[in-house]
Length: 349
Image (cartoon, rainbow, N blue to C red; front, side):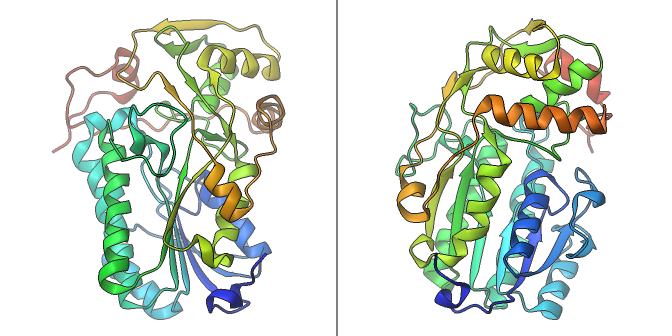
């Protein structure tokens, strides 16, 4: 393992984590603190919880859309590293909230990139998404062209491109991760629009059937947070990772039906699916992690049964949580009926 000093940083690097009260972000904060970083944890708490953030971090309540706040934080703390995870990651819903999606996921990212360039940040670590591949044949590799199928993925791909341009024009170093279907403790199980493992567990707690779009034969590789957060935290210690893009997550795909059966077993109930009309989405998506293994020493260790069981134990402790309805839809046409009921269908301005 290379030390921070190998890339010019200090042993107690000043580091910004955005989306720090969210699921992946809060785990990353803990990983960085364990590695000696001085962490500023930025989150607007629109989707995360303050209680998720390790008390050793300096917590700032605010939005990456607030460029004045962003610039002030960079002025005050002189960050060496930025880990950017803040996003509104409801991929399917992004079709119906295009403007909100691009503001949150693209313009907010640009504010951070600008500040990082102006303050000579050593490395900007960005969590993109496997969604940028669209419907490419699996296993997807980092060398494949991006072909986004939804506005969320378009925004992620655009930030990736901006980081590459910023490297060429301004010398900003970066590392891009494309995680996929990450689940685990601290996930927002009340969110109706994303994170299928959490959605299934929440439905079971409420005594509801598991809603599945289509026939459930579509497949994904589901990745436990314990396999994802450490490799992101350690990436800045490896000079060979700089200016590179990495898939990160589980290797073995499972159908949504198989996932539903696994979640039901872990929660101690029979598998009770409710099939809904299919959405427009890739049928089968999983990724190659050969590059991450070669350059980062990545090893996915947590199997689906083990990971889901660990999350189920946590969910049984915290109990059911209410969904935060999205009440500013910009487009109503073709909205899935189950989402229509949960959003309230209020059109945005």
